[in-house]
Image (cartoon, rainbow over the protein chains, first blue to last red):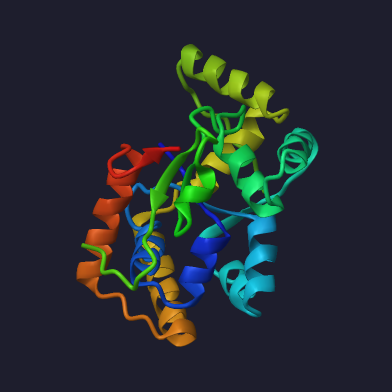
Length: 133
Length: 87
């Protein structure tokens, strides 16, 4: 099972009523669905970009928050040193294969191009209020 | 809470023990976590309805039953790598 990771752009889109992001979230607990994770730094970035957007996502019980601790924090530091933004760095680290997620996580984003060269799986949401069809 | 024993194949026990060791936890704690992650269908539906109502109240977005079916299909597609790019 490829679990999903909503980045800060997806969190912002969800808070703005993005139809496809909302449909994915609502459906995520109905079927034998993947877990949907939020990166802690993505929540912070979304909240900084638009007050209330991070809080809105945190209040949704479908999401599990991914912390940036231990080995993940060290890997994140390497990426940030190379010029990657903090929230993007956490997503890249979390999305790569790990002990907890051997096949990695699939990133859901409206800004897929920021992951170019990172070697992670990305599902591009699209900017618009697209329907789930 | 009273505890009970469960009979399972030795191979299953060994696999659970290996996963528990990797996660630095016990088999009992691992099974408890797996149980919490495996919700009965009625509970899944209830959670879905709560989320649908919450999103409608907070963002105004209306997710119909048809949207849920399409969303479920898309989740399966994403899980199987369809429409997903490696960047």
